[in-house]
Image 1 (cartoon, rainbow, N blue to C red):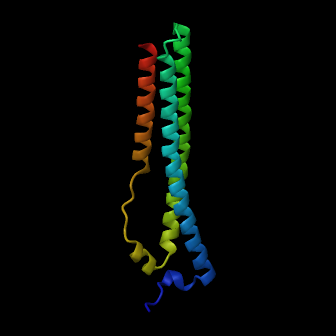
Image 2: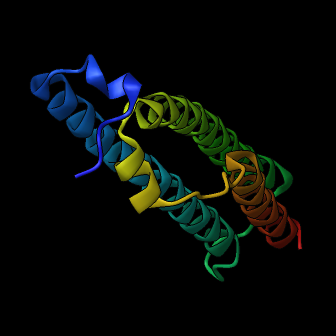
Length: 146
């Protein structure tokens, strides 16, 4: 059996178990927050589609005031969803930093078994989800004023 690295010589078995537990919880948190971003975006786009659908009903005559109200609701849905996506992004970045700190304290054997993984930018995903919200808002407004 290979000797432990210097960093792990001073770590007790209890501390090592705590680190592994912390690592597992943090990876689960990351998966949860990423899932929440997609779920939120899906529901926001569905909400925008519902707003656009209301504007297309034959039984409703849209006057400028109604169009403005529907557009304001669509804007509110988009802005709130975008803000929550930003907050989730902050949580993802925090967990990623925590994961890197925890990962650095784990043994060389663990790190070699996991392998090197390039860090994918969470900002790119956030921008894509914001784009989806913006496109949904734009299409909704187009249908409202059509």
